[in-house]
Image (cartoon, rainbow, N blue to C red; front, side, top):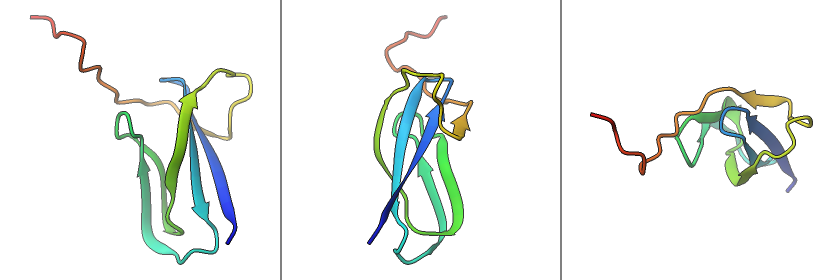
Length: 84
């Protein structure tokens, strides 16, 4: 069993997601991992081992970004009142 970690950086919401998977696990037809905050797709693949979000953190160093970049975020703050 050998775990692989992928880093995905979202430059819009300034979050870094640590995705992990067992590269010896059986392949599944479709894999899709969504952001736990906004449900935007972080990772999508076909015939790939299952992937999960191990953790996420604030992206503090934008000079050292991962190769996997996202530039979209669908987060809606439930505490912001809508204007009439």
